[in-house]
Length: 303
Image (cartoon, rainbow, N blue to C red; front, side, top):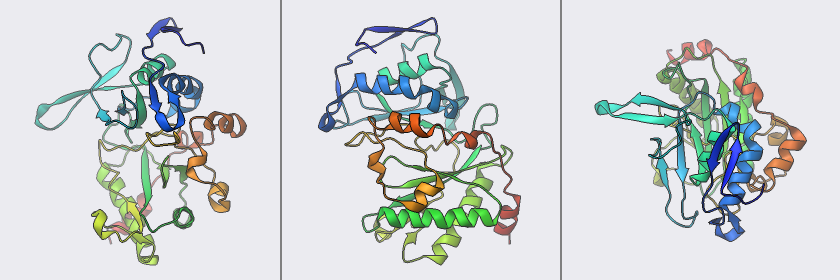
């Protein structure tokens, strides 16, 4: 891709600005590199964004300057950028961007949106999540091997209930496991499901895990964050970059990779992600096809 002022994509003109702006100073990676990455990763990431309200983390001056989250579609967006209005508390309406094509994805990248966060539910079932998410967030005294072992314990626990989960790196130091669901459970039900399994893990391994909400009370353990399963809360999308040194990317994994280890989450970054995807393909696609029931677990939570 040449460094140009605009691209003609799908019959739309996408204007590009300040492509030489440095976004990752330690790695000398530019906005140009971010735009190019999103163009190349579009076939992999777009199915995971389809029909989902999006929240962005923008860094107009690079990751060493303060960024900000954006929910509302900014003024001046092209007329072809699709939005969806959602009424929140106090009658406030937020017009969320819906990204279903490569032109919108390029426009997002040109806004210096490094992180993309989709909702856990999709249109038209915004009150019913498509996924339950387990966020394994290690504190300072935990190793990535500890995180892998807890993820494998969760995999075995899910299998006891005849459920499948799909792991990915958070793009930082943790792992996230997505469990695809039939979209007829409420957020409260899904959160209860995740909390119940997290409690089982915490009781089995209290020396390694914690469910304490206060960081100061976590004692350096792996935080089992079930509270991500709340309407409007989001986790970083698979294949999305992160605003951290090294330009890491949230990368889907196979359970065999999680079991064998031998890698660091930082191994997957803006420069290495596409070669990996061209080699292993889109291993997260079953997440969008396999929808599961959690009735048996919800019955246990009511005991």
